[in-house]
Every structure is written in structure tokens, then in C-alpha cells.
Length: 122
Image 1 (cartoon, one colour):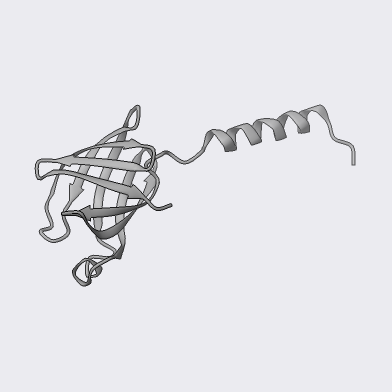
Image 2 (spheres, rainbow, N blue to C red; image 1 turned 180 degrees about the horizontal axis):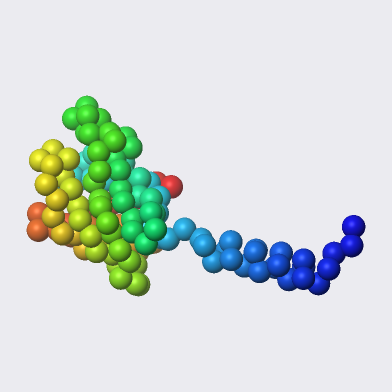
């Protein structure tokens, strides 16, 4: 099979664009903690330019009842590992503004209710 120069260039550009689409550091599954205890796991995914987090597992019987509920909404990247959006406590159903910073495998979420550190699982 004979390859043309155009085919080789296209294949090279396709490989570059795939590597450029590497997952954002916030994307993945994160372990949440409350009062030093593991509570739930939140999976953060990207939808267009925004990121959303859904509870996918609970570490306590109480937390298990919230699996499938939204925990983070409409997060947008501010650059440098910083994000802004809304956090929703599924126990009460209301959302508040959230500032999030991702550094390595640690996500720090700050709201009016306080600050939590989450650890990346995958």
C-alpha cells in the first residue's frame, strides 16, 4: 500500500490533536471527606466547557442514599488549576458558590460552609 505525503501529515496531525485533548486535571473520581472521615466518591466529567460532579459511591449507609445526585455543577476553569461554579449538598438540595483548586491528587473546595480536601482515586 502506497502512502501519500498528505496521509502521513494527516496521521501526524491526528495524533497531535488526540494528545492535546488530554483530560483536564479535575476530571476523574474523587474521594470526599467530612470531619476526617471518607464519605462519598464524586465522579467529575466534562461537558463542553463546563465540569459537573455526580456522587457515584457512598462510604457510609447515609452517603449511599445520595448515589446519582449532583454534587458539583457548571464548574469552569479559571486557569492554573482553579475552577468556579456551584456545589450542591444533596442532603439539603440547595447550591452555593464554590471555588476549587486542583493540585496534584488533591482537590480543595471552598464554599460559604467551609473548606474540604478531596483525594483523587482515578
